[in-house]
Amino acid sequence: MPVPHIVTPIPGPKSLAMYEQERKLIAPGLQSVTQWSRVCISHGDDCVLYDLDGNAILDFMAGIGVCSIGHAHPTWTAAVAEQAGKLAAGGFTSESRVRLLETMQSILPPSLDKMQFYSGGAEAVEAALRLARCATGKSMVVGFWGGYHGKTEGTRPLSEGEQVGYGLPTPGVIAAPYADPRHSPFSGDGDLVERTAGFLREMITHGTNRDIAAIIVEPVQGRGGNIVPPPGFLRAVREVAHEVGALFVADEMITGFYRTGPAFAFMHEDCVPDILIVGKGFGNGYPISGVATTEHIARSEPWGKPSGNSSSYGGNALACAAAATTVQVLRDERLGENARAVGAHLLRRLRRLVEQSPIVGDVRGKGLLVGIELVREPGSREPLTREEVKPIFLDLLSRGLLVMPSGSSLRINPPLTLTRELADAGCDILEEVLVGARVGAAGTAL
Ligand SMILES: Cc1ncc(COP(=O)(O)O)c(C=O)c1O
Image (cartoon, rainbow, N blue to C red; front, side):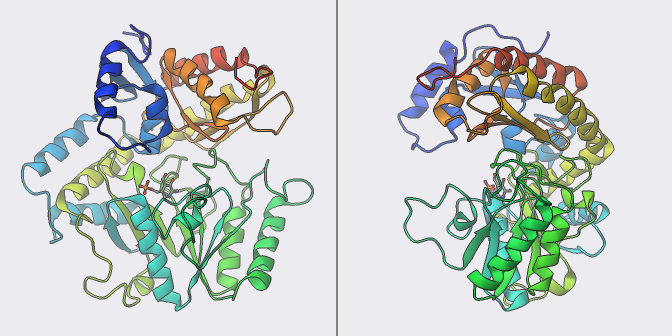
């Protein structure tokens, strides 16, 4: 059967009935795309999602970069089922945790030889920031405009769009412009990396108490729209961090586990962080996240004391079996090489849209992490609103392609198993929809 394969309008009657049944009981606030689409997914197979009505939808979203080795990968499914039949809960040493630690050592630089595990992304970010404060004896954290690190109280101040309406944010956090090639205040003249790093330095000198524990950065900004900074940006941030006596923390929740080609995106610049944060693609859907750091930093107290950073679910045998198998499959199937090759092909094809579509302002990407920025008219940098992006998302979905809208951008982060043929099938749909699209006088996408 060719993919995508559409047999009913989306949502079909069975999806819609299940959606309405759920809506009576579930609290509002779920991901917008789930509410816009009103679809009920029954199962997945590699890069394809099947809804209750039998529609086969090409998945360019992958649970927002979570499903790294494809839905229901047989090796992963067997490993999780086997471990679930033996032991799921508890923090004791397990064979699967030892296997995971040793597997991680084989893909990490030798200096990052200590790891700890958690269950969610924001939880791992918070653990990393607590560790940075213990290791440096300092208090403040510097992040970046457009960043996203979670919705917990400690991470919200580092996540653009998560502050307004919740009262006073957790203190001690400040943000500087990211090296966004299109929307940074420094993206006009001069060297963007140099100017961004220069401002970061000045901001710390003149706008803080200079008591900086960490500078935390995403190597590619995910929720910002898969924004790729120029080469050299990570190195420049690390240099500033070390100049001011702070730790350089890389949040690779989205960029990790071969999504951009190498095991981690910091490897493009050979710029090893002091603390690396991982999650999402780590467990292929089983909730597991983690931090990796040096032995010296990990020993910092009270973080490194008994029970200093443990949690109920962190590093249990089931989570570790899921993650160890995911990483093994990523390596055995050389999915980093696939991400590089298919991602380059996807980017080449989609970049043509900047010329072909009146509402595509930019297409950027690294590996299988691509962003399409939607704008009001050709040559404009004025972003479309969420309401204007919604009909475009629904049009793509009705033709069987699921992408992730984020602000004015469409984010593309499929499973790393994506073939060139499926990449082409998705590009065909994106072209069909975006080449003819325009924004109406009333601001609605037509
Ligand atoms: C870079 C980054 N850090 C942290 C998080 C938070 O992860 P979680 O949603 O698992 O808490 C996300 C989630 O999208 C992310 O993209």
